[in-house]
Image 1 (tube, rainbow, N blue to C red):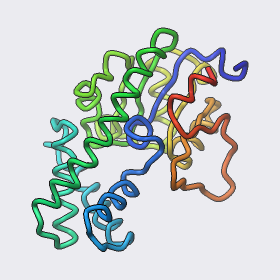
Image 2 (tube, helix red, strand yellow):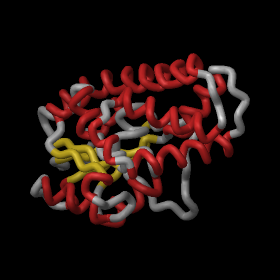
Image 3 (cartoon, one colour):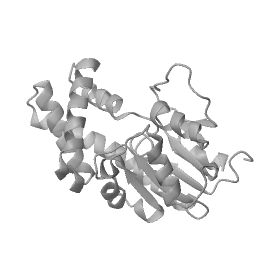
Length: 229
């Protein structure tokens, strides 16, 4: 508690952090495809996922999408790349991902409400230009003092400038801020190098780089953060 007790603000990643307990979108989609009866290799889905990811990042109309619309567009692109044509199964995949995410976001919305009584809060995310819309749609915005979306500001994690921009927007020093995220490479390493305290949400399939910098704490569920603070 002494290690984190003097912090003044907490910054969160969005995908994999607020919408799940450390689950990468690609891994989550892979499990859902399997549940829906598709026998697709991980490498094929990975290619389709990042194909869809790149188009969503470049398409300006995505900036206005809510969460369900984003997922529908993303999965439409995945199916196109994979050569699949099954509207029933496609809808099943979209709705499964959406409902699962919504349950985490609802839980974490209540958690953010409690945290915001004591700390400044923010989101710093590599997203598609619409993370602020989704945060508002899911009731998170009222507890967030800043929201930075990589596609809106033109800086992507792990570029340290995106974290510096967030800290400056809060008018705080780096040492006063904790970053919470699921990506070791994009979240933990750059923030740690800047002098920020970091909390890693270690999901079911963590991606750990060679020679990683040590984190300040490791959790498997966002609500465990309260025990540190």
